[in-house]
Image 1 (cartoon, rainbow, N blue to C red):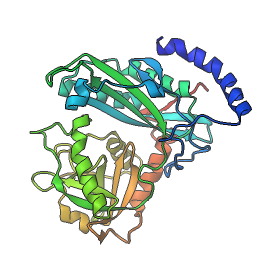
Image 2 (cartoon, rainbow, N blue to C red):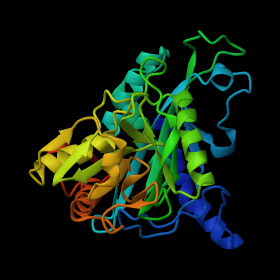
Image 3 (cartoon, helix red, strand yellow):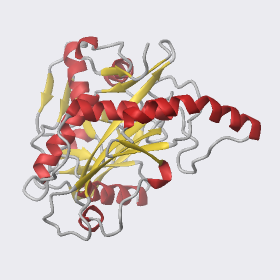
Length: 353
């Protein structure tokens, strides 16, 4: 049954289901996601809620039934792309806001084009499906969402471009790192280049690169990792872009230095320029510039805006978030719930007013 037709039935059943749970004295559980920490970025009024439904090609399915076959082309060859989104609860508005949904869906479609996957092309339909999934689960707290497109040919070949299947998920999530102030290692693994894999798209296969860097950093006692390009410039972290403040200038690597064209990165650039009136240097960054920087922070949909306390055991500033980092953190916290950059229409209300 299509999502639109199922939502009414879900809403009608939710009150009866809640009453039944009260009578039993129990609540639904989901081992992996039952407990979520409070987000650093925003106020979260209630504990994480269990997730009942995911979305499979526009239809609601039970969480446990969202599966691919072990011989699907995606599992065999890593042929898939995805997007990660955030949504934030505003206690003042009693509203949940999804952040930059259309921009994420556009990048998902761009990723499909680059890696040649036949999949849906309607940005607004995909966005409406994601918001409908949140409402179907009646989630009212800070979330991380995923939209994933897989090549699902049965026991297929690496060159298969379809058929594709689309899964979407909305999961309670607080602070991705579990802490603020990251100790970061420059990885011995180089960031993949555009000559080998397209770093500007969110291809599932690309994430082995960052995974290896993160595993190395964790083994060595660090919180996170940054990777360099093959030519030795700073690229990005294992799933997040990087900024630094040096000699009074805010700087970040260009999109041609093997980085994902991050939507959070774009948001930070916009806020720095329009809200703080800053000129931002988008230029190659050397590793040793980070050591002498006044401030360093990373940003991403999951990572949000988080300051770096040290790089390769070299303390950045005094190890705490600097003035500019704190200003951008505050602006970002307000932007994701529609209090800043309202003209950009970044924050989409999930529930009817």
